[in-house]
Length: 453
Image (tube, helix red, strand yellow):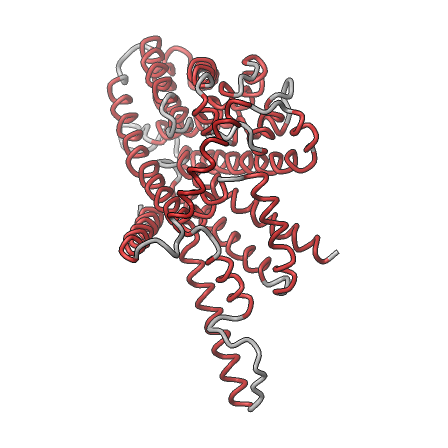
């Protein structure tokens, strides 16, 4: 009983690692609006992540860890394969300050314990490392990682964070601000056409999320239509345009980009089409109509990658469009937030705000959007893990892509040779210094951007 509980705890901790990926994406989606709320939520999630990890690791002894390590590693490799090193790299980049703090506490704990034994004259001759036994076991497990690959992916994740949260986020804000100024005096049909075209083009960029686009619809279309339709109908019109834009962009990404790319073996190989993770996703997204797991993935996942993946998997377009309709729960608060940002700037001639409550309600809408993004991401991870565990027979029944399997077999030797050549123990010292320095700079840059935007 204890062994199974331990294994379950570690695997649950692995699920929590996956949640961190979605946290980063949600933070990128909310970049530019409600940054204080987003920062607070992400700090809370980071704290919970660290606390959960410490609680899990101290809840079982070294013998139990050794007995379960092989089983847990095998299960994770079966489900996630090469994604494990990517996850570890993101974990290192995301949680390095917490890791350092944890190791420092472990070292202090071990030092105090040894000094107490010396002072009391009861030297037991037990564990004599510079960390506690638990900490030493965890450090030994870290040394068993493919550190070259993990550090490399850690650097890549840091660069990706900077690109998404600084360069692209700022570009999106600047571009949308320019667009808002250029369309201020245009009639509603012209404004709608320009905003729809700009939004569609931005949806085609893989790393640009949908929330800034919906936000801009509220800022631009509501003022453009308030004179003819009033605020309420202009708001409804903006939400409708946002939903149509999302559906059209998703359909284009799926049929034109994804389905065309599915003809190339290297694309199907890159997404891991034969992996348990992708097969579980296929199983969920193939369900007809609207189901909670399907909606969670379509809404909680990143816009472009999910839509293109649907095309690569050649899923039914109508079913995916129906499952995408609940995206309106994100569009509504985002558009309302944009409208409220405009309304908060409306003032009478004497400088008194026309809508003094707009800023407060806007902050509430921003918080709602953030919570919805986190909620759908959480449900997506939960259901993907549940399906991969409970519907394994259906997953195994999915036809394996033989072309990709053959390609994987052909590349397996090259990958094995590369893995042997890049083992941490054989990497030259200078290259180690370069890699560790790059990772350190990447982590420092990410935290500077996150804590001091």
